[in-house]
Length: 323
Image 1 (spheres, one colour):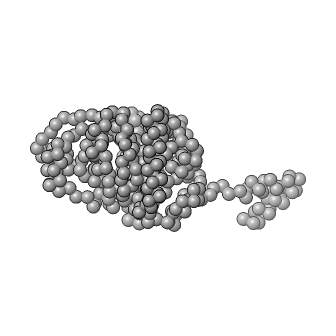
Image 2 (cartoon, one colour; image 1 turned 120 degrees about the vertical axis):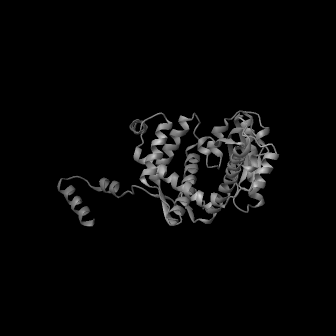
Image 3 (tube, one colour; image 1 turned 90 degrees about the vertical axis):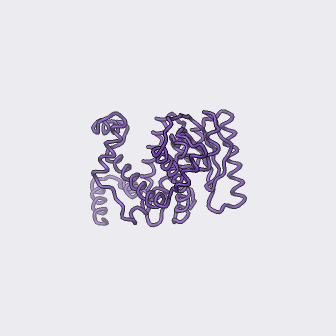
């Protein structure tokens, strides 16, 4: 490397070209580490790519993008949590074979009413590549696998729980929800709790005064769906997180709850839509109840598990200084 540099420098001198500016540019680092997660690193180029992707998704959903710093911090935090889970998947020797990956990517294209070639063309027009999307899908599939192994495998649904749910009038109604989360660390201090409570109250006032819920979520929420406007998707009654179960059925469409405290922090939940379903009975009904109760427990366990693994990881966030 040194001999090549000297040779090129000598060639420049022979031509009478001042090499200093070119040298300075050549010696500038092309990339830098923005976070260390255990023994792996997240690079600036990776972060920039994900920020661009998040910005496009917000634009497509009609959600006002947060400030550059807030968007950067939100995206980097998501990447840190993903990296921890991917490391765990690697340690567990989990993998995704090409056949399964191809089938999943083709399914995504079909869900968008496109062939695989049309999907690739659309991605290219948006400045993305099919190869990059395949890699994103592969990572998501690995994360789901480790979540299944570490979280879902610990969940059991008893017949007594099914009976209790049916006795309490459980239905197959579905709810489209969004949330804003102000997170708390494990074993928070009184000052941290008070600060989080003050922030969630401030955010609720902003929403009450007309601020767009999705934009506030994108800018301020600590939830994993923040950059989707806090959208939690459509969930059956049994899939609603336990902490929301008593609140959501009593909300009107478009209404935002009062702050709700959980081990993870303080939440505001908004009911975007509600739909009823057809009644079923017998064993089919019990199977549905088992599934909805499983999903509810899985949601509760997953939130706590992510908080736990993040707290147990070595994290050096070089942009915010937070570990």
